[in-house]
Image (tube, rainbow, N blue to C red; front, side, top):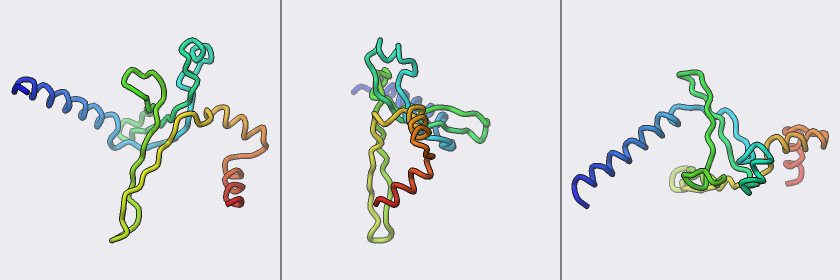
Length: 134
């Protein structure tokens, strides 16, 4: 690769890193939920995308403003994508990396809330029931 192209690639990467840091660093995840990629059912029909994706509502303590982060399957936002989270587990010699994948097509948050209400439950009652059945 010639020097000019190499510098352009470095600058492109640095500009994306700067934007990602500005948008994501030092923020607080306020809420997580799955929601339809297209909120309007007519849009879902028109575009043929009926799946849900993970949404993170984040708060910036410095500006006191909220933002929303969607996980997309590509950079053209053609549909939701899965999020892979890697994390450390254990201590000392037992320390190792594990990962979990947060998938697409989990119930839309509004539908989930409606179904919980119809079942006469709240999230904490459901979690207690899940714990009892382990």
